[in-house]
Image (cartoon, rainbow, N blue to C red; front, side, top):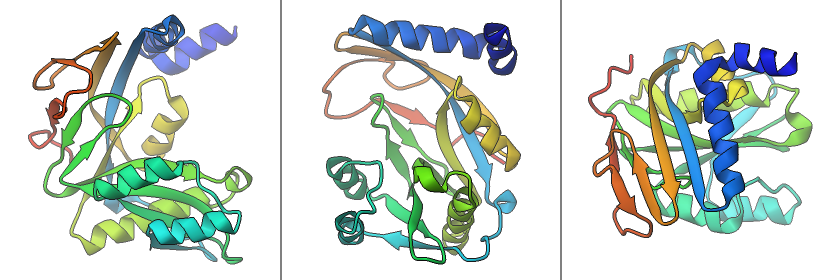
Length: 225
């Protein structure tokens, strides 16, 4: 019964992706990812919940929070890579000044860290990644606060949509975006075997691991509104 319900919720393609991803991971020499590229309109993001605020955090601020026992999920080396890539980290705080979650945002381009690809972004879009809610705050309003803060950050820069990639079997993430009026623009598949990666719609499609320049996936011509 559980298997039937999973297939009904994910659909055949989502279920097939999940099975392939798990099998590839178990092999130890391969990986399979099928991403949905999701477009989140700023106009449908929530208002800031009462008692919350969102502010930009730099490396020093994250370090100070970690020293005070408020660590985020991304380790220091990942944080450094994200800051070096020009991403902005937004942190949501409750009325007790507790860090409840973070999200990372960037414009222009985004270099994915799970697969080898550089996403080229439309002029009026940003990219969101690394959304994280502290476990003890996941039943509260931290999620809404982060997206409200994201909307304000976007409005200040004249941005209308935020793009992101979601594994097509990550049902909770897909449903969360749908509740905020998001829509799926396209699906893209990445397959790695050993040191080689093949992907759909990138230039080039086939690359060897460790290349200095990642293959590009141009989203600038996609209708995202």
